[in-house]
Image 1: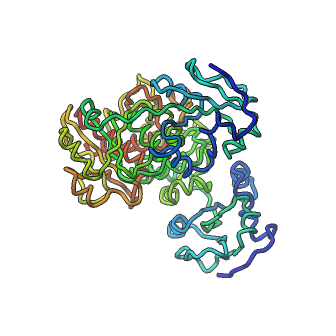
Image 2: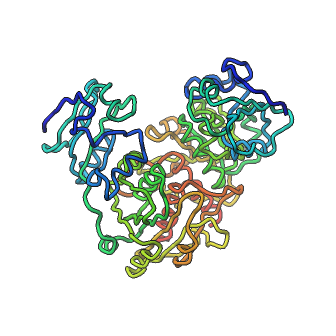
Length: 273
Length: 273
């Protein structure tokens, strides 16, 4: 490992970390045609360590020189450590009080959907889930409650975006995800692989999730839309079943991560009942 | 309704809205011995309307003069409308871009725990849940998934704090809450009222929540601790049952609102199975 002290916010060594306060710009830089397409950022020792132990390769680590915290464990020899004082850090990131270390990781290409589906049994499919906080919560819950894979429609946001990584507590590293280039047409890849397409919707015509029957090893894809608009009519039509979480007191919806948690819990229970 | 244009941030008319950027100060002001003990704030038309339609009385409404949004529906004749330009609003609140209207409501005294328990069947009890975002999510989920009442230990935060109210989508207005002045001793009020005390814990010795048996009308109190520390040993000892949400991939915990959602869902399913 080499250590560099960076004193100029325009130093190319810290280009990965510019303007962390501008979420739209950051997400654009990490798109497939952006200048950071090959990288993603992760903050905080626990999350960085989860990234490293899941096999992701750290490129650089940005640290406040005055930080008294220990370095994340397991740093690879190839990583460069970049030290900055608080003023330089703020100038780079646009954010005051950057207390946690931030790592820039190499971003591997996404696996092919058809290949990833071969080893999956419970899959979550997202449609228009474009809020990174919700995406992070969804991954954390998908990981805890028995999902093997997340399939993203083209308009769902990137789960490797820093905010999503953080909210997931690094669980985006524990569960694979793929991108379906067309939607809802892309659902046919799941259908061909034998998955039952189960749409989660608040509609009263949908079956209660607790009444959904499923064999222990049946492949199931749970399709979830953004809070508010929910799933599109085209996606509902493409699905094999519609299920709902019964709700009291005319509450109209749950947060998307919470809805995923309850539905995945119910699906897992149904497998073993 | 009277309308006032406020040009001086120190005008006593807007004292309720000072320093919205300082969460600790705000929470202190609204404590029982604070200068705002008799009030709570709610932001955004939907949440303000839910407060009004749930019977809470609006005292004043603070609005940006340049806002083109319609006023919240159902404003009482007794409410005062306070208009400020953006510069004055920022000086009052300490926050830029205050786009949504904010209302200051009169805060009614909390009901007595023993009285509130008489009409409740599924209760959530919180221990040390002191993050307003988590508290808001917990209320939203408790409301949607069949809880009738929330009992707060002395160290849980105030669900009527602005951030909690907002995250709950105004569902803090749909479900009653009470404060237990001693804890875990206060749990005995629930025991005397016939409630089974069910502690949610990640411990492996705890029973799977899906295996928990419960009659259709049995009174149940689900006790939930903060993410991280969880429930104290004293509270676990005071409880009648310990249940857990089975988790995969060594995920150590769920967000407290999400854990409440899954457990309440499972309890409601158990009532009807």
